[in-house]
Image 1 (cartoon, rainbow, N blue to C red):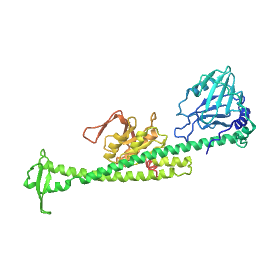
Image 2: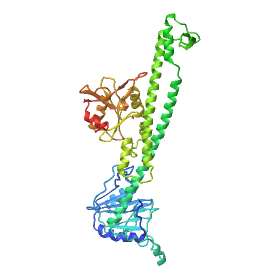
Image 3: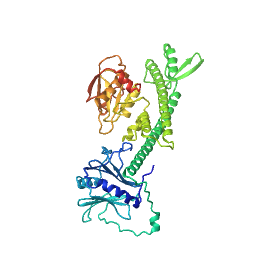
Image 4: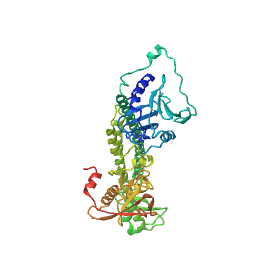
Length: 475
């Protein structure tokens, strides 16, 4: 859907509708409007003049410049936008003043809004839109683009032949409501398109990250398969323990009676036979765990890749999408193009565990194994994210990922504490203490899988079935 950009003739017709609607209206405030569908939550170079019963949206965006008149207060100030010197100066100068008139400059795509002592000129040429506020003497007070002087362009002489070629769509500016409705519809359509494009970019980045992670895990798994058969070596050494074999050239020469051949088994000169036997079985157990964990993570990540691939296919279809359809994909992937922290989102993409979401919309991650715990705490979580652990017991590391300058409510903390307790095996423990602190206060103990933490506070919780059902999406 394209913006209904106006020729100078159409702008003249629109100004005749705007003038009686705005004349005498007092500008109570000026703000940058929110656009919930936009990836950033607002459009740059948009300003709203709010009067008692109406709003006037001014857009000075390239290829999307224009005006929309809203008879009701439908637009709200954006909480995330940073105000420019232009709209700040406009607010300081114009707020509280009444609009005297709205007129189109003859022969140009320019609109003049008059106030007591000031005039705001809006140049609505699509390629180079501009706003300029001047005082009665013509002195520039502020402009959206750097300039120190301003003058109204001289009227152009136009022959009837040229005038006949200028668009003049009477139905387009038949009423303020019709034109403004078209404008706002195009604005929403562009915002949704931008959000869709950004979501495709975010999901594609996640897909490529997952692809690299799966390839790395497959290489590690293949390497683990090529490792020596430590269980075989251990069993063989255990069979010959009574004979106390001697290590020569870093190998034991052991007879395999089933194969009827001598087997060279690598050994460590620093270890006695008992220690060497324990090392073989330990290495066998570790290698088995690596293979099982690697296979499990590959399967989990491939499942996530399949989901991302499916959603990317939906998003890349040529037909348009509605905002609810886009939000559904964002919720199913736990990713949003509005999230500013790309680093965490990349790390989250390669996390193979389940992801949960609180009522507030915060992402909660809860480890189900030692490997997941360490990955969550030291690879995914950042300094100010919240970290939870059952007090005084081994168990799940649970993380609440916090956007910059955000804090979690008690309800979100209770969500995370319930998951932490459940995944620590505490379903039947009753009321249990769960500590929480910022991730930066969690330290790993050297050469161990345990951690220490400080600066913690404590919640006393028991597993709430209804809360768990909601978090698991079973409501």
